[in-house]
Amino acid sequence: MSVQLVCLDLEGVLVPEIWIEFAKRTGIPELSRTTRDEPDYDKLMAYRLALLKTHQLGLPDIQKVISDMGPMAGARDFLDALRRDYQVIILSDTFYEFAMPLMAQLNMPVLFCHKLEADADGFLVNYQLRMPNQKKEAVQRFRELQFHVIAAGDSYNDTAMLAEANAGILFHPPQNVIDEFPQFPVTMNYAELRAQIDLAAKLPV
Image (cartoon, rainbow, N blue to C red; front, side):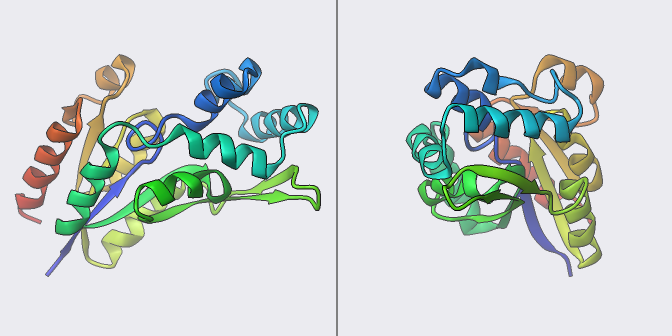
Protein backbone atom coordinates (compact mmCIF):
# COMPACT_ATOMS: atom_id res chain seq x y z
CA MET A 1 0.00 0.00 0.00
CA SER A 2 1.38 3.40 -0.99
CA VAL A 3 1.92 6.09 1.63
CA GLN A 4 1.04 9.66 0.73
CA LEU A 5 4.09 11.93 0.49
CA VAL A 6 3.84 15.64 -0.29
CA CYS A 7 6.87 17.32 -1.87
CA LEU A 8 6.88 21.12 -1.86
CA ASP A 9 9.17 23.63 -3.46
CA LEU A 10 10.48 26.18 -0.96
CA GLU A 11 10.97 29.57 -2.60
CA GLY A 12 7.78 31.10 -3.91
CA VAL A 13 5.69 28.50 -2.04
CA LEU A 14 6.69 28.83 1.62
CA VAL A 15 9.30 31.61 1.69
CA PRO A 16 10.12 34.58 -0.56
CA GLU A 17 12.55 34.16 -3.46
CA ILE A 18 15.71 34.35 -1.37
CA TRP A 19 18.14 36.03 -3.77
CA ILE A 20 15.61 38.62 -4.95
CA GLU A 21 14.51 39.45 -1.41
CA PHE A 22 18.12 39.47 -0.23
CA ALA A 23 19.00 41.95 -2.99
CA LYS A 24 16.19 44.26 -1.84
CA ARG A 25 17.14 44.08 1.82
CA THR A 26 20.85 44.69 1.23
CA GLY A 27 20.37 47.38 -1.39
CA ILE A 28 22.49 45.40 -3.88
CA PRO A 29 20.24 45.10 -6.96
CA GLU A 30 22.86 43.06 -8.86
CA LEU A 31 22.13 40.15 -6.51
CA SER A 32 18.61 39.86 -7.93
CA ARG A 33 20.09 38.42 -11.13
CA THR A 34 18.61 34.97 -11.75
CA THR A 35 18.84 32.14 -14.28
CA ARG A 36 16.47 34.16 -16.46
CA ASP A 37 19.30 36.69 -16.85
CA GLU A 38 22.21 34.21 -16.82
CA PRO A 39 21.19 30.66 -17.78
CA ASP A 40 24.64 29.23 -16.94
CA TYR A 41 24.25 28.40 -13.25
CA ASP A 42 28.01 28.13 -12.64
CA LYS A 43 28.55 31.63 -14.04
CA LEU A 44 25.61 32.97 -12.05
CA MET A 45 26.86 31.55 -8.74
CA ALA A 46 30.42 32.77 -9.38
CA TYR A 47 28.96 36.23 -10.05
CA ARG A 48 26.92 36.11 -6.83
CA LEU A 49 29.80 34.91 -4.67
CA ALA A 50 32.08 37.62 -6.06
CA LEU A 51 29.46 40.28 -5.30
CA LEU A 52 29.10 39.06 -1.73
CA LYS A 53 32.87 39.22 -1.25
CA THR A 54 33.03 42.70 -2.80
CA HIS A 55 30.39 43.95 -0.37
CA GLN A 56 32.08 42.13 2.53
CA LEU A 57 29.02 40.02 3.29
CA GLY A 58 30.00 36.84 5.07
CA LEU A 59 27.76 33.89 5.87
CA PRO A 60 26.69 35.21 9.33
CA ASP A 61 25.64 38.52 7.73
CA ILE A 62 23.69 36.70 5.03
CA GLN A 63 21.95 34.42 7.52
CA LYS A 64 20.93 37.42 9.64
CA VAL A 65 19.33 39.14 6.65
CA ILE A 66 17.57 35.94 5.58
CA SER A 67 16.23 35.23 9.07
CA ASP A 68 14.67 38.70 9.08
CA MET A 69 12.75 37.87 5.89
CA GLY A 70 10.51 35.31 7.53
CA PRO A 71 8.23 32.85 5.72
CA MET A 72 5.37 33.98 3.51
CA ALA A 73 2.16 34.98 5.30
CA GLY A 74 0.25 31.88 6.34
CA ALA A 75 3.02 29.48 5.34
CA ARG A 76 3.76 28.17 8.82
CA ASP A 77 0.12 27.43 9.66
CA PHE A 78 -0.40 25.78 6.27
CA LEU A 79 2.69 23.60 6.69
CA ASP A 80 1.91 22.68 10.31
CA ALA A 81 -1.58 21.52 9.33
CA LEU A 82 -0.29 19.65 6.28
CA ARG A 83 2.31 17.78 8.34
CA ARG A 84 -0.37 16.55 10.72
CA ASP A 85 -2.01 14.63 7.86
CA TYR A 86 0.82 13.86 5.43
CA GLN A 87 4.52 13.17 5.35
CA VAL A 88 6.08 16.30 3.85
CA ILE A 89 9.51 16.92 2.30
CA ILE A 90 10.73 20.27 1.01
CA LEU A 91 12.68 19.95 -2.27
CA SER A 92 14.60 23.09 -3.12
CA ASP A 93 17.47 24.38 -5.24
CA THR A 94 18.56 26.72 -2.47
CA PHE A 95 21.33 25.98 0.04
CA TYR A 96 21.14 24.72 3.62
CA GLU A 97 23.23 27.65 4.84
CA PHE A 98 20.66 30.08 3.43
CA ALA A 99 17.51 28.16 4.23
CA MET A 100 18.08 27.04 7.82
CA PRO A 101 17.15 30.38 9.45
CA LEU A 102 13.82 30.15 7.60
CA MET A 103 13.38 26.46 8.38
CA ALA A 104 13.58 27.29 12.07
CA GLN A 105 10.60 29.61 11.58
CA LEU A 106 8.70 26.82 9.81
CA ASN A 107 9.16 24.31 12.66
CA MET A 108 12.06 22.53 10.93
CA PRO A 109 10.46 20.50 8.14
CA VAL A 110 12.64 18.01 6.27
CA LEU A 111 14.60 19.86 3.59
CA PHE A 112 16.58 18.44 0.66
CA CYS A 113 18.73 21.10 -1.04
CA HIS A 114 22.36 21.98 -1.81
CA LYS A 115 25.40 23.11 0.17
CA LEU A 116 27.68 26.14 0.30
CA GLU A 117 31.33 26.37 1.34
CA ALA A 118 32.71 29.25 3.41
CA ASP A 119 36.33 30.14 4.13
CA ALA A 120 37.83 30.80 7.58
CA ASP A 121 36.59 34.40 7.45
CA GLY A 122 33.02 33.37 6.73
CA PHE A 123 33.01 34.40 3.05
CA LEU A 124 31.32 32.05 0.62
CA VAL A 125 33.81 30.54 -1.81
CA ASN A 126 32.03 27.63 -3.50
CA TYR A 127 28.83 25.61 -3.78
CA GLN A 128 28.01 21.92 -4.12
CA LEU A 129 24.92 20.69 -5.93
CA ARG A 130 23.56 17.47 -4.47
CA MET A 131 22.97 16.27 -8.03
CA PRO A 132 21.57 17.69 -11.30
CA ASN A 133 17.76 17.83 -11.46
CA GLN A 134 17.56 17.00 -7.77
CA LYS A 135 13.83 17.62 -7.42
CA LYS A 136 12.82 15.33 -10.27
CA GLU A 137 15.29 12.65 -9.23
CA ALA A 138 14.09 12.71 -5.61
CA VAL A 139 10.44 12.28 -6.63
CA GLN A 140 11.40 9.41 -8.93
CA ARG A 141 13.18 7.64 -6.04
CA PHE A 142 10.26 8.19 -3.69
CA ARG A 143 7.93 6.58 -6.19
CA GLU A 144 10.31 3.64 -6.54
CA LEU A 145 9.98 3.28 -2.76
CA GLN A 146 6.21 2.95 -3.24
CA PHE A 147 5.25 6.42 -2.05
CA HIS A 148 2.27 8.10 -3.69
CA VAL A 149 3.83 11.50 -4.38
CA ILE A 150 1.94 14.78 -4.60
CA ALA A 151 4.21 17.66 -5.62
CA ALA A 152 3.64 21.41 -5.68
CA GLY A 153 5.77 24.25 -6.98
CA ASP A 154 5.49 27.72 -8.44
CA SER A 155 7.84 28.02 -11.37
CA TYR A 156 9.29 26.54 -14.53
CA ASN A 157 12.09 24.75 -12.71
CA ASP A 158 9.49 22.80 -10.69
CA THR A 159 7.64 21.36 -13.68
CA ALA A 160 9.91 18.31 -14.09
CA MET A 161 9.22 17.44 -10.45
CA LEU A 162 5.48 17.91 -10.95
CA ALA A 163 5.49 15.73 -14.05
CA GLU A 164 7.39 12.98 -12.22
CA ALA A 165 4.92 12.93 -9.30
CA ASN A 166 1.67 10.98 -9.18
CA ALA A 167 -0.01 14.39 -9.02
CA GLY A 168 1.51 17.81 -9.70
CA ILE A 169 0.08 21.17 -8.60
CA LEU A 170 1.11 24.71 -9.49
CA PHE A 171 1.05 27.31 -6.71
CA HIS A 172 0.76 30.99 -7.67
CA PRO A 173 2.72 30.49 -10.90
CA PRO A 174 3.55 33.12 -13.53
CA GLN A 175 1.24 33.21 -16.54
CA ASN A 176 3.83 31.75 -18.92
CA VAL A 177 4.05 28.60 -16.78
CA ILE A 178 0.25 28.32 -16.63
CA ASP A 179 0.08 28.63 -20.41
CA GLU A 180 2.86 26.14 -21.11
CA PHE A 181 1.77 23.49 -18.61
CA PRO A 182 -2.04 23.36 -18.73
CA GLN A 183 -2.02 19.77 -17.41
CA PHE A 184 -1.33 20.96 -13.87
CA PRO A 185 -4.10 22.47 -11.71
CA VAL A 186 -3.40 26.04 -10.64
CA THR A 187 -3.81 27.23 -7.05
CA MET A 188 -3.39 30.81 -5.90
CA ASN A 189 -3.46 30.55 -2.10
CA TYR A 190 -2.88 28.00 0.66
CA ALA A 191 -6.55 27.07 1.02
CA GLU A 192 -6.71 26.17 -2.68
CA LEU A 193 -3.41 24.29 -2.47
CA ARG A 194 -4.55 22.23 0.49
CA ALA A 195 -7.81 21.41 -1.28
CA GLN A 196 -5.93 20.20 -4.35
CA ILE A 197 -3.54 18.11 -2.22
CA ASP A 198 -6.49 16.45 -0.45
CA LEU A 199 -8.16 15.82 -3.79
CA ALA A 200 -5.02 14.28 -5.28
CA ALA A 201 -4.62 12.06 -2.21
CA LYS A 202 -8.01 10.47 -2.92
CA LEU A 203 -7.23 9.59 -6.52
CA PRO A 204 -6.55 5.92 -7.27
CA VAL A 205 -2.86 5.03 -7.32
